[in-house]
Image (tube, rainbow, N blue to C red; front, side, top):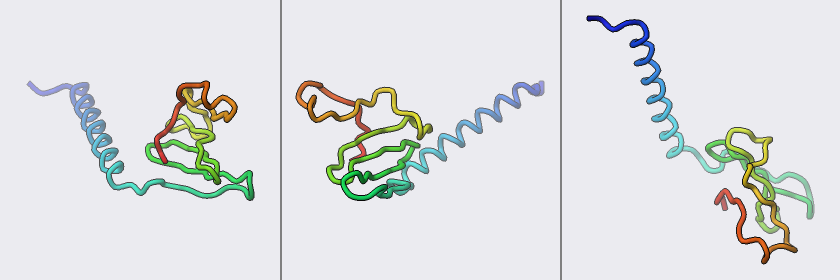
Length: 103
């Protein structure tokens, strides 16, 4: 009995998934962190923009290092759903906030 076309397509799809997983693991181990980092702006309003594996864009205060914004993975212009901006006046009142742990 020879496998049908659907079986062959399914096997090819499984192989592609496996290759992609191996490539992602290889990239994670070998990638330079961050992929991109550059200061944007001047003076007190300057921020550091950082793009990191696996596709997160973050913005940090250039003076304090405080995270000002973080994107959804793979969507650099979409604010992460769990991100809560730092508000100094509420520092002691809010228990925790989203952080990428990228410091």
